[in-house]
Length: 139
Image 1 (cartoon, rainbow, N blue to C red):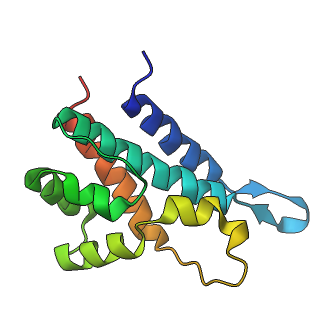
Image 2 (cartoon, rainbow, N blue to C red):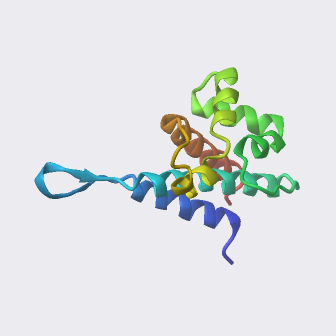
């Protein structure tokens, strides 16, 4: 059976493949930034939902900050620890990057808006939630 954690893993790997630089002509290269962001953000969402499922809790929506708040305190603490980011800075970053999946999935609609991302934070967060899920619940 294909589980939520299987889907999370697939989106995580998809993001990594989108982040690969492919050589083009004349020394240029290509990276698929928008799909990389949406896939990585969606993998975070799905790993968090998989953890919540294991904690006997439910969650809906795409807002990473709101989903993160539903995790148990020990799991939140472990995710923050693995990212290597100070707790207060982590909370600021996750709030500022809470809608990456929606914002970047519909990036073409945001022509006149300033769409930002903390790429390093998103990478650290995705690695941390994946690590917590795999070390705690993946049997």
